[in-house]
Image (cartoon, rainbow, N blue to C red; front, side, top):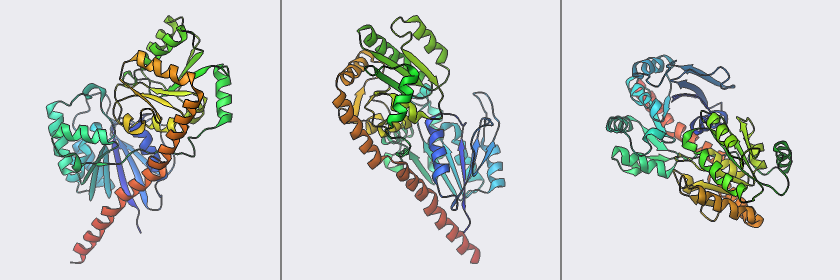
Amino acid sequence: MRRARIMHVLHRMGAGGTELALRRVVAGLDPERFEHIICTVAPIPKEEFTGDVRLVSLQRTGTKTGSLVADLSRLFRRERPDIVHSRNWGAIEGVLAGKLARVPRVIHSEHGRDIHTMHGDPWRRRVFRRFCYSLADEVFAVSRELREHYAKQVGISPARLNVIPNGVDVDRFRPNPSSRHSLRQQIGAASNEIVVGTVGRLDPVKDHATLLLAAGQLIAGGMPLRVVIVGDGPERERLLAAIEASPSLRNRVTLAGESANPEAWLNSFDVFVLPSLSEGMSNTILEAMATELPSVVTSVGANPDLVEDGKTGFLINPRNAGNLADHIQRLADDRDLRSTLGKQARRKVESEFSLQRMLENYSRLYTVRTTQQRLAGTALGRA
């Protein structure tokens, strides 16, 4: 039986949650059943991806890429995919292009919000998004909150959008005492010190400034606290300047940069923090929960679907450094509470957000109707 050829379309490959979920799908689905082609609008870095996947790019640079429909349609006609799956606004023109190229099945998914439009899209974007939703054979979001948001934006019933949550590899992300000891030695954390950490792109939407402000208050108040920030991005220099300007933070904060082994860094933490202003469905929260860490995260996006306040961690309002500091203090003072919340967090991930469950959902998404369409096409040909 011929493999189903899937053309994944997105704006660019990088270190974000959308790209991470795509990597997991490509690596995890049965290679005897599915063939993957990844198409980006922006150029693809040379080091991106290894394994059984082909990469193509429209090579568009800059913030204004112009219409993509003609180029995507030509690409689809040449490659003849069984499925086109576009992700987010930056690739939504793949829906129209897929229909013009008569691709058998066209899927679109929403994985987050643009920080510039997180409170609402311009009317022209809403109109075009609604048009593409109506054309697509399937539209889904990665969380219930995103489904509600985009349904409201385009004026349709949320029931018309499905939800396929992200998943995490609970075998890779798990408590590891050896990694904990090694990484804490590396950053100079003593046994009595509390390590508060976060993982993610250094981007304004992640609001690392609030974490630094809360940490500065706690350190100035006498708490033996260290902060670890894993990731890289445009905010790095600004964060470095803020750290150097603060007597409390200087020599107490580690900017670890990008890491191929975030699971090791997570094991060095006592508390995971994500003070984002906006989120889709955070992979890093899932990874922290799988590592049995209690989390303190903002009540935005799908975060409340993941972190149950008082049960697997705590929810706070965005930009509230005082509230963040209070919750870190509470967790620092109570080792048993940290342990209880962390264990409950891992159980929740194992039961609801495992990588295996996510892959099963994508396998069904790419299989059922594609097979039906092939059978229908065969029947029409015979007729």
